Length: 281
Image 1: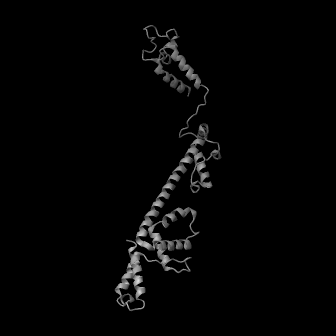
Image 2: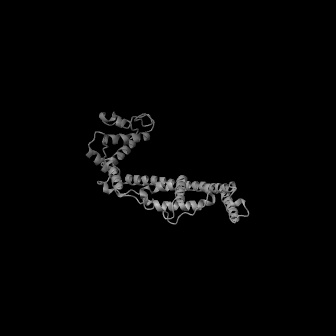
């Protein structure tokens, strides 16, 4: 290690030695080291310096390095205890309990659970992470998790808006009643049965068009004793159009007989159905 240090310091001085011939004092005279003993004046470590000042500076820099702790980097053939000594030299705590988690702003649901945190610390200790490295990795891991979570929430919001727009166009004036019925089905059959770990996936499902349609369909088929509050039945534009056409096409219906006592009620019903049928247009 000492020889390498000398080499680094000496090489670092070469830029200050000038571009003249080694040992040349600049005026063509004898080199400054000519009066040294024969074993020194011919040595490459001496002749590379142009003047004594450069050699003195190199020596001073070398002295600064003497006495400093030297860290031997292990190799693939090194023993576990050699790696352990190296890790502790560079800052790994003696025990994994020495790692400290930084204070970061993140959704509580995303933070590592206690048993996962212990496993995280254990692996970090095995890999020789310093306290600073552990703190940085912990922060990075949770930062990435928060970014993914934020993206998920954004996608769910956009999906919800897309679904609402599609269903409003499909159901028209029946939208609120249909959604109310779907929500009652969800409350009756799913409330308290979704584990927290699956809440995100269920929320994404509950925002999907097909799921809401299915829940609304169930709501229209089950009784009020099954669903608390019961659904308020309001026809979709398609249902209203079908019902209106059935009345108009039935020539025996009171709608076509102005002397029938139910004629006015039939006419009012057709008008109401016509309004519901055109609501989605």
